[in-house]
Image (tube, rainbow, N blue to C red):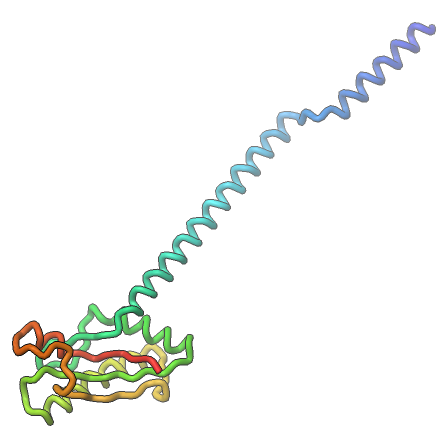
Length: 171
């Protein structure tokens, strides 16, 4: 009898120790692996999202560094290559609360009066596009210098191209 009680106590102790064991059943180990994989996938997705956001910030910053829009000869229409640039500037104006001066310029060909009017039309074209992106009239000032403030004083096609422009200046 004593022997069976001792055997029973030993068996109970062994079962108690087994129940308190730190090894997890196989099902729980699989769940942990699945949780680890899900956490890793979530971390990777978050890292990709942050990288994409940073790339977008850098793209916008690069656009905002350019503050000149060039035009074709005797033309005041905005080239398609500048639409994204002007959209970025418009969003910046709205978010910063700053105002902008749009300075229109022309090359030396044509009369001074004609070039003054052409510079104004170019600046107004830029202003109109900015308004379509939500910039208020009170945030935009339009000035024309005509041919009076050339970016390049030479008298050739390359210089004339540089002079047919609108400069975006923040206040």
